[in-house]
Length: 313
Ligand code: SF4
Image 1: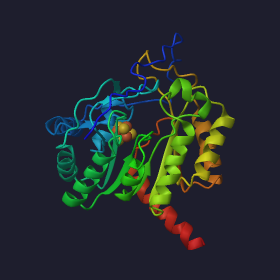
Image 2: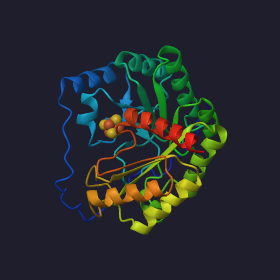
Image 3: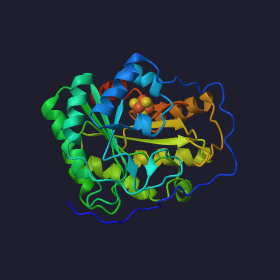
Image 4: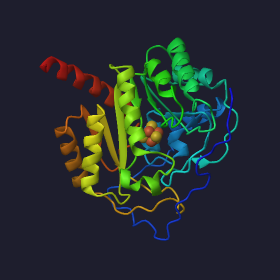
């Protein structure tokens, strides 16, 4: 595989001098101290696998790992981008682990997962952005453990023509790509990405495989206006996206973007109602909503929602 040395934004560019406000009482998280969490951790280490649960410092890790629900992060633990919200390490990644698809499939089998979520770091250094590894993981899991449904959460494959088509044609059950925030905030929060290119990626996934469920998410509390959130919803519906997730942004470390505001649970409920009215098949909106939180249960509901919708027409 050929590699280039192009790396976008190798340093975290946001250096806030204003700290985040104190967490409100509705943000309560549990540490991953259960014996089940220890087993998941041990399995990941033994198979040389990474999870976004750990690398992104997800607040739900205590709850998810207690139920042996983890989201795998492939293509290493080092990202070529430096988004201001993200805890994943930035730098020059190492070589791709060609044993990863096999190790991942074995772990999925041994964990007895019903639904698998696979994401990755951005790999702008790879010719196809790492699409080949997504395909290899999907194919190996299907061969070794055919039962689970598969959800992938991909990078934007910017300037990697053909990569999205290749991944979509592997037919994951859910194709997820997060817009993360409103377009006005992209230069400071997601500087290596382009809002309309991400939207187009989601639209294209459905053009390639019309039966695929598409999903996207944003974080709130980064300084976006309510009207901007509603515009993002409209844009996602225009791109045919089925499932929207909205969660509170939490600052992983002081060098990341500061939380501008904690959105109240009542406001999340209102976003949920508005998004449903705009036609999403499913919406998850709450302070601790994350893309992969309860993804197994949500997938069942998503499938049921589509079946009900088709019965009505
Ligand atoms: S919400 Fe997703 S990323 Fe967070 S702990 Fe659960 S599975 Fe992992």
